[in-house]
Image (cartoon, rainbow, N blue to C red; front, side, top):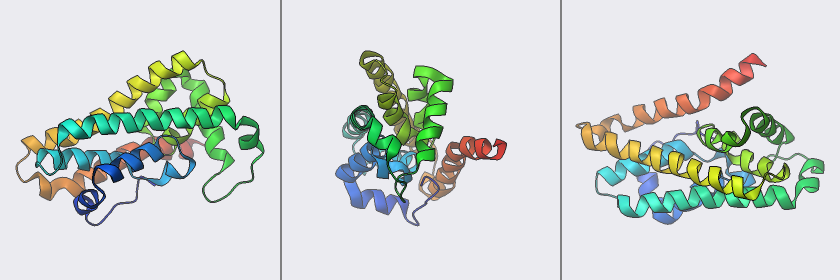
Length: 197
């Protein structure tokens, strides 16, 4: 889950490297079990490490964008192919029907732009592309909103980490507080929604 913070976030990202970053982002953007991965904080930290020359930004940005777009394509395909099975499937630790229901409500409320908006909401970002597949969204429209959302979220959060790491002196000492703020801001809409319910 997004609120999960690593005691040594920079050490974690250094350990998993480019392959780990790609897998986590890809999984969170369209695989059922990916909803609990720390997407926003991971991308921000990776961008920060690029500003410290630990990672290469010209490698990181394309990698992240491909992972976000590719993950959503898999989610869409999953929803399209497994529509009946998903609706009748028993709930488990990794799959709860309420996630699909909430993602569907979000999708219906915000239309195609949900594919962009959902990128910034933990859990919802995993299930909205699946719901788009279940709802038989036109594939051409899905491609457009998926690509736009992938660039805005994937490149945007990563570049934010890079930019702040570049301009703030001693930014490494402020990394955890900044990540906490990002996590709170990303989780807040979901908490407000739960409170309204």
